[in-house]
Image (tube, rainbow, N blue to C red; front, side, top):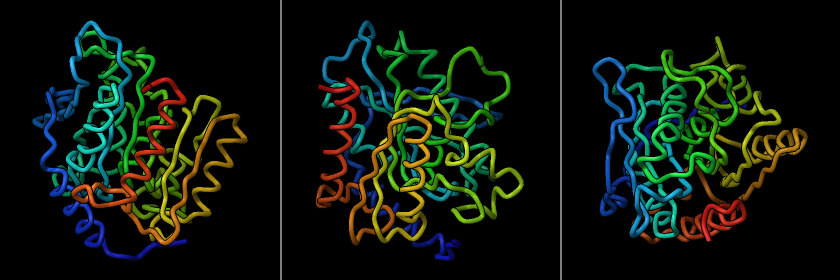
Length: 279
């Protein structure tokens, strides 16, 4: 299957989500990676009363935008919500084509760097390095899924003894099939098998929850069902939640007036509760 809808459609949705999330502000913005003259930051939301001596579960979210644009603000509402539930929650910056002239490879490299940096700095952040989840939407869902599946695309020079694989995945309409039948093949065709999460599932892939609208123009319900089937065949946990009549990016906050934000957050909470990340 091929998708031909213009990127501008995604951009409008994401701008709306970013604007509605502007009232949420992070507690800290440390630099997790410097590459050339580019500094990438984690936008961190801490639970009330959080201390560096704590060992708190953590999640890092990656924004959507077709590997071309987007902003960490998209997941500020999710971060603030999960911080209120007792997790350290982060929204990561990563390099994108419109700003940095990069490819999906660099997006994945940055995603892996973010997870690795969190583990390396877990003690000073008050984080449990064995309970680090990753999440994201659309292309950010791809980045998150890639950190949980891919063996390639680590940033050279990093400490490979520290794992960049998260312990759980929370994926919102992720473009995690990059084959000729999936999304983004034209941009990754020379290395699609190495960068497509669906084609790299193994016995170490983290437990995963997926949210998708039945009318998504970029990820079909059949693709999502296949992903979960492959996960099950590998002996891994995968939950798929399909929402009838909903399109791409249906889950965004939108000023607190989107019932599908509430519905997906409720299921996200239940999933994280089942893993012992929140009570």
